Length: 113
Length: 112
Image (cartoon, rainbow over all chains, first blue to last red; front, side, top):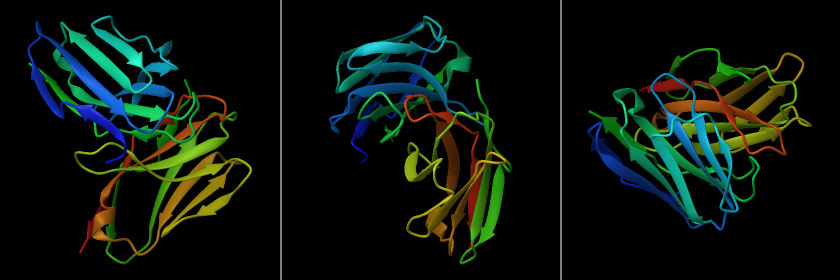
């Protein structure tokens, strides 16, 4: 375990469903991130939260909605997704809002049918 | 955005041999570089990092080389083992920025 826990590990959802991904970190970090990992493509940064405040939305469609209730928890709410949204969604955290000490979770494998 | 790319998408290496994985970057402002290993079913795991004021850094069985002149980064794995089979990513950043830019990854397969 890396200290960053993501649930569920796998998720299959229909295009009309609403679901949420959860990330929890026990490292005392202050910044949390959502990344999307598609096959044969580099990791894509989606959202950044620094001290619970969203500091980055990397042109992500509104069908993805993040929530960060505190520095230890991060959610990604999913609604009306498309098949091309199928990917591995990775959560990461870092001590401060910079790139040192980045730690990733194991990801949620999402399949949209 | 800036591109961080790996030269080869796949690398097959004999167990016990040394592996070299290459990465090119294009952002001259980048001053912090990281190598990650991602095994099947897991997230990327930190291997080793290097700052731009260094050109070489060694860890346990791994060495990272940085050539800022040609914007090239490499990861050397000594005495490659079956457990080294994974996808390897380089990432670059500026030290005051939270953004990491990743390459597409090199899949390393170790032959017994």
